[in-house]
Image (tube, rainbow, N blue to C red; front, side):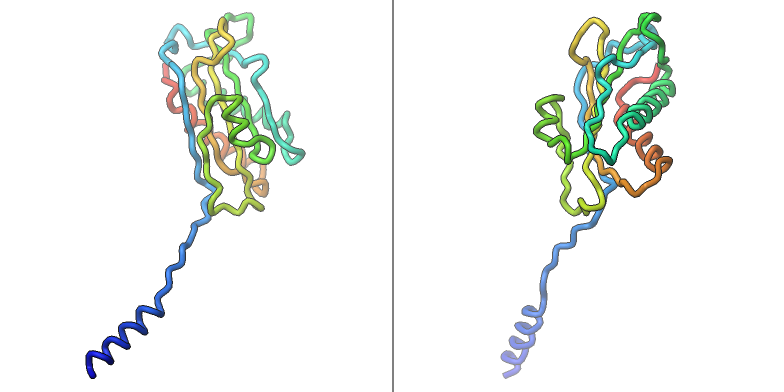
Length: 187
């Protein structure tokens, strides 16, 4: 009798248990991938210039492409100068070129990015309110001035919050670019 009562209590206790998977909303997560050879960078290669054609922004009307291009150049220049490199003009015989591209997920899919850039970090949108955030991709590439293909490139993905003001967004962007460029050696 006591065994039956214990068994019933155990069964009723076990049947009341449920498992619920909780997915934490984390729009701050990012992922990055890089490839190439940075061994050409040295004290003799400290001068760079912007790539003449690789400064692309692929986004809808929520994004002012000219402002984003300017902000991207500011972020990249800050990082490069902090590492000892110097932005010069084309007439100063730059040692390398820096190009970049940005795309929103609604305007360019991961498979399109893979086809164009040869890289894709594959940031998952699981657990992110995609009504509030948009997946964004950023490509940074370094070029030898004599070669058409990049010698090094990095591709990062994160989430854009359009509700942040410009200064807050720029600060997050600066931090993201600094992380992407960590592999670039200081000279």
